[in-house]
Structures are given as C-alpha cells and as structure tokens.
Image (tube, rainbow, N blue to C red; front, side, top):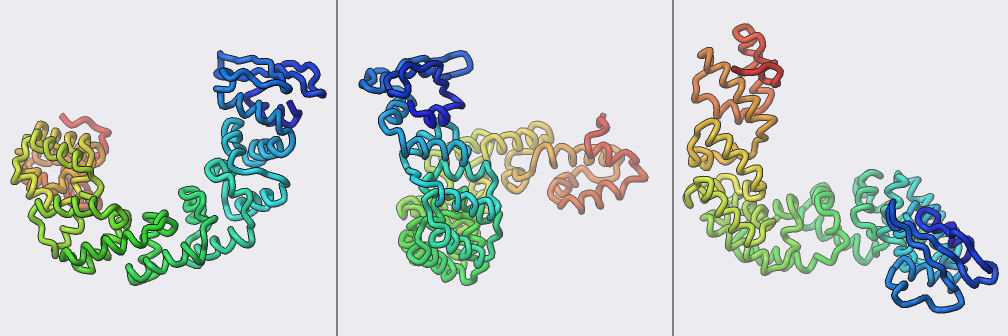
Length: 408
C-alpha cells in the first residue's frame, strides 16, 4: 500500500506490519471497527481480494487504492488533511472528485475562508459537494457571491445559503439564478419582498419551480383567490405554491369544508396551514380534537378563527387542553371559541400568570372572570396591570410570578 494511503487512513486504519511493501506484495492492515472491535487482514496487492472481504465498502476502497497509487491518494490526503473529512467521508467523496493538483482546491478553500466559512462549515460543504473543490473561483464562485451581496445578503446570509444548498454557487447565474429571482420580484412586486421570500425558502432560486408555481398561481386565481392573497402566500410560505397541483387542490377543498370564503384573508392562512398536513394527519387531528371534547361545530369555529392551530403538535394541544379543562375547570367549548389560548406556552405563560391570578382573586383585587384577559395580554401590559400595580398590596407578587415563592 502506498505510504500516502497509510497517512490518509491514519485515523481509522493502521498498517501493523508489512512485508515486501516496496515491491507492493502484501500489507497487514488493521481497521478499527469500534472501540472494542478491530479487523486485521493481510492484503496481497498482486492478487484479487476474496469477494466476501470485498463486501466491506471500506476494504473495497482500500483495495482500489492499491491498484491506483497516484491520484486517488492525493485526493484522499487532501480531503482529510486540508478539508477535515473523516477517512470514511473522504472515501465516499473521492468517488465524486479527483484532485490532480492542489492549486484550484487551495484557491477554493481560501475563498471560502475569506468569506466567513468556518473550518467545520467547509468540512460540511465539501463532504456534501466534493466537486466544489474543482470550481473556478473567479468565473464560477465570485460572480454568484457578488450577485447575492447585490441583493442585500450579508456574508453570514450567504454562508447559511451555501450550507443549506451546497451546489447553489455551481449553478448557472444567467441561466437559472437571475431568471428565478426576476420571477419572484415580479410576483412579489418589490426586491425587498423577493429577498424575504428567498430567505424563507432558499431552494426556490435554484430549483426548477417557476413553471409549477406559475401553474398553481393561475389555478388559485381562477379558483377565486384575490391577487393580494396569492402574493401573501408566496411571501409567507412560497413552498406552498411549488407543490404538485393535485396536492394543492386537495388542500383547497379541505379548507373549503371549513366554510371559509375564498375572498377572506383567513382562507389563504388556512390554506398555508392545511398544505403542511397530509390527509391522514388532518383526519387524525380532527379525531384528537373530538376526543378532547370538541364538537364538530367547535372544531369548525376554532379553525375559522385561527387556522394556524392546524400546525400545532398533538402534544401541545393536549397539554393546553389538560390545563384549561382539568386545572382551570373550563369547558372544552370555551377554549374552542377562543383558540388563541392554545398558542401559549404552558410553562412560560399559563402557569405563571395563573399563579398571579390566584393570589389576586384570593385577596379580591381582581374578579375571577379576569383570567382569560390576563392570559392573553402582552407581557409588558400584564406586568404593568397585574404585577407592579399591586406591589403594595402584595409585596412578593413578582417573586410568585417568577416561581420563586410557592402559592398556597
């Protein structure tokens, strides 16, 4: 086995002894499979390795290196020593790129470091897209970075973009990136809105979604949705307009069943929420709500008022309902008629504020019916209206609110 090959595997593979290595006859190779398991084999580089041994992908790669001692060893060495890949990742990556000289890869790594990529991010990027190392910095990478900077993206924004889509800087600037961005500018009316949508769904500028989105937009407008609602959907969650038309129409029909008018702003909000649910998930969520004591009319009323509750997890909904029904003794219909209550955090809002309510009602400083308002007001207003206001009557009220004193 070539000496540089041994170096490439130094983290996981150790050549325990060799015989006739210069003549490339045999090598005794020890591979660490786990902290307690080691595999030791003797490879005869002049004869085929037994097929059962070759079923191990790591050993297949080792045997291939024995037959090709020059370029693959440079590729592996560079991927491990310069890019920080593990031997296993380097083996996988070496099948997708070949390094003949280090001049171009060195310039790529220097370019990435100059633009704020950390060593860990570079490792992640090269592991996902090894051919990045073969890119021409001035012709391929820099023009894209300059374009994104021109849109108002910072270096950290661009770094996040490239990590989320490792090949974005390898795509055609004039053939794909610029036309896609122009499409979203036209759809969303301003460059600022296009950038906002882009940050929410970065893949949209590189994927071939334009035709599908145009088709879905035409369907929604024909269906009766106002242009303003379509624009809002594209701005808030552009992925909804990029899904398959059949899936989009299925979501539209489910929203219609809620009784929302197509011209209502809630229709588009419900469609955004519904599009994130499979039909089976939607049906399971309906059954869960019924199991928590909601009638069919309760469900429809809650979804009409606040469609976003469709996206809440079962755990969050159950925890909220348990608190309202079992702790506060409210009826399920009371929560359904004011579904924003399910939005609040149990630990950060509901329990602390209910402690304050309990103290104030015990001292007859507020009515028992004040609780719902206390739970819904903004934090600053809550502190001003229900904590600092009663500091003289209840000196330790703030400590009770923060959970530093037990409420009897």
